[in-house]
Amino acid sequence: MGESATGSAGHEQHLRALEYANRVRLARARMKRKIAAGELPAAEVVLSCPWQAHSMSISDLLMSQKRWGRTRCRRLLVSLSVPENKQVGTLTERQRLALAAVLTAKNAPSAGHSHAPEPDSHLPDGPPPPLATRERALTPA
Image (cartoon, rainbow, N blue to C red; front, side, top):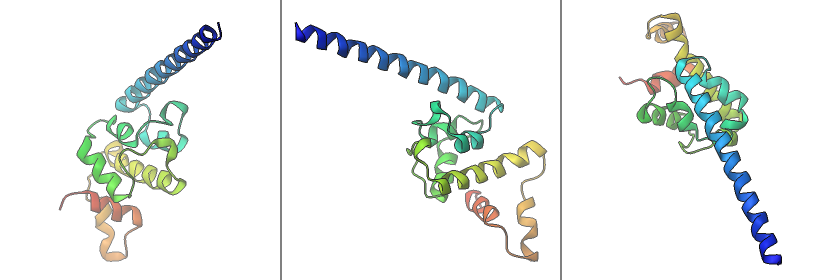
């Protein structure tokens, strides 16, 4: 009789786990659609780390943006020394801030419809800010 009680408890736990996994999957799909539509910036997700993104890989989050494929994602993450498969919830504060800063800077020119070479235009006047240095490292020569 103890075997059936344990079996039903295990079955209930399994069903709860499946329900939770389904909720996470649906919430992530909704979040990724918002990111793709431009309604929710990926940088905001990186900074706030909502519950549905906590165990999501950073590369999945980045690739949910329009025009972000595996190569662009990998290039950015390598420049920041962040593994592709790292979960959003396990990013350090430094990684989180650096990634959000680069994402915000990358999305700013497209929102303002300005031309891309602008960050390099101030190089002769003085040293570029660290963010501009990272952006140049990501763009092909």
